[in-house]
Length: 154
Image (cartoon, rainbow, N blue to C red; front, side, top):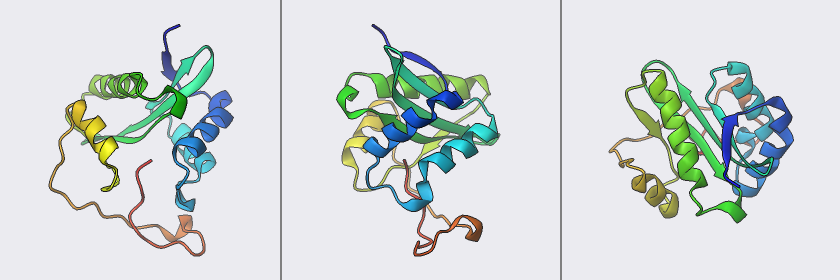
C-alpha cells in the first residue's frame, strides 16, 4: 500500500511524539516534542505534514515560511521505514507547499557531524552553504541547566 502524506491533525500528537522520541533520542530539553507540536499547530501555517502507511504515522516534516525564506525544521521517518523513499517524499511535499506560497529558497540545518543526513539532503539538491548558524535561547523558553547554544536541528 502506498504512503499518504497529509496535514498534521491533533489526533496525531501521541504518534508524532513517539516517532520523534525514536528518531531523535539525544534531543535536548529545548526540543520538547509536545510543546514543539503545539506551537507549530497553533501557528496554523499549513506546513506540518505526516506520512501514513496503513493508517499509521511513519514520518513527519515540519516546514516554515516567513515571506523571505522557507525552512525545513524537522524531518523524521520511523527507523523501520527508512531508506524507502519516505523522507524524500516528505521533503518533496514540503517543497511543493513552500513553492505554492511563492517561496524563493529553502534553508535547513543539519548537525555538522551527521554525514548521512548531509548526504541525504545533497542527493535532493541541497548544497552546503558557507554560513555560521547562530542562536539564542530566549529566557522564557530556557529550562534550568540548559545552555544558550544554538538549537539542534530535529
